[in-house]
Image (tube, rainbow over all chains, first blue to last red; front, top):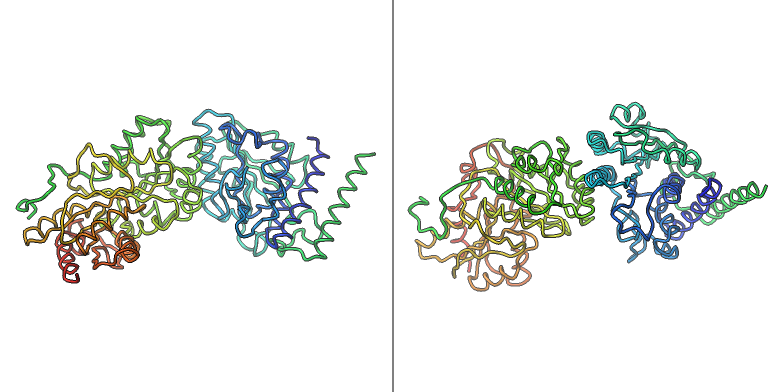
Amino acid sequence: MCVPDLERKSLEYRKKILKYIKHASAGHTGGSLSCIDILNVLYNQILHVSPQNFSDNNRDRYIQSKGHSVEALYVVLADQGFFPESELETLCQYQSHFIGHPTRKVPGVEQNTGALGHGLALSVGTALAGKMDEADFKVFTLLGDGELAEGSNWEALLAASHYNLDNLVVILDYNKLQITGRNKDVMNVEPLLDKFKAFGLAVREMDGNDIASIKATLEDVPFESGKPNLVIAHTTKGKGVSFMEDSVKWHHGVPDDAQYQQAQEELDKKISALEKLESK
Amino acid sequence: MEKTLDLKYTYTEKKDTRSGFGDGFLEVGRKNPNVVGLCADLIGSLKMGAFQNEFPERFFQTGIAEANMMGIAAGLSINGKIPYTGTFANFSTGRVYDQIRQSIAYSDKNVKICASHAGLTLGEDGATHQILEDLGMMKMLPHMTVINPCDYNQTKAATIAIADYEGPVYLRFGRPSWPIFTPADQKFEIGKAWKMIDGKDVTIFATGHLVWEAVVAEAMLREEGIHAEVINIHTIKPLDEEAILESVAKTGCCVSAEEHQMNGGLGDSIAQTLIRNHPAPMEMVAVNDSFGESGVPTDLLQKYGLNAENIVKSVKKAIARK
């Protein structure tokens, strides 16, 4: 899929994320809008995963450690055909299996995640299993930045490096905000680049809200033979909706009617602008 | 004293239950190529060295990082692999509870959590390492099977049997040299209580090292004309409620015996079963809301009342309440 098509998809995904969060009156708006471009490129361009091959042992694995941004994942999985999109109308409702954090009850979800600091160790184990089996699949995991305060991530990175897991691709959704405020005020994680390099990882940085940048970076995996891949994706929380961008209060804010309308209009305008650009 | 008693089960050799695990682990590794091992820097203590030597490509050291080991084990369990994790019981449970809860139990992963040095009989290292709460923590988790075998042979049989069961298992064993009084060729059936001695006056439900104490207590009681039924509850969860109710319906009272806190242990589970189905007088031999301390195992078991003498006393109390 070409970059403009993916860009349009990202805008459509954003509209849907807002639609279902509004419908459920619950969700993690800011984080889902922050990571959606990464999920878009992963599922439409990079991952060898589809409803048809989901029971194939050699499929790529995507494990979302920052499970709270589940709306982004559900919207993309619906678009991939894992389930009808209309099922998302039950999101977070009683008796729905579309729970507020990823669950394997939902077709296409690889692992149950949600409590932070668990996804990376799971991914390391899965990548290790791939190495044991001399399989070709890769394991992609998405971490949040606030989540890096969990020491378990650093244990997992030690092991990833120790076992030379170059089939592991860790992507950090680095929007610099967490539920209480800015990372640097809650618990400073910098200098990240130096830390990751010191842990023996092959590190790249990219603009995690720029399709071309994401595509170019992820298509280049593995970065270095024998080293786990780590991508620092610089992102903006709430990306795509002017009043949600880089704002703590949209961590799990639900838009009221007027806000919802404005958000959808802003995204519609961006789609129109893209269309005009394409028709030129 | 034991020598003068007319014991229904006897022994010629003592061995630690962790060696039963180590030997069973090697055997199941030979039988089943999907079995893989992980250890958090306690290969010698867990007796995992023989497996590691024979199957180095199926064994992963995680360093002193138990939480990471649980997560990696859950991740490794894809495509049919059966990970066995090895560390002390306190580092296999309390330290890593959220990893087990989310990545193993909630996710229903086929991980076998193998936990050594459980309880007071860890001995000299004292309270920090003597976990007495692990059975409670593990049995509360949905999907988790909890097993606490009584001697070398039963531990070995259980270690082999759990590979054929699909789902998360907590397997608990210990450090002290202990009588081997069950047969080497036993078939281990998860969730099936084993009536070791028939009786009519009281039932002793015992698990782990305390099964031996129950066997001794039975002989002591018989000398006084009290006929105790002894049931080996090697599987705490799923609990064999049918066997428990059938026995208590006959004997009319019971005593539970375990190397664990009274809160949350085997006794708790049995009491729940009785209350819901067939209330009967019951006494519990267990640690009463206390941490452990340093000492040789027999002294510690004596001090905390986890021995045959205290089982006998508890039996008499239970019978008197009938």
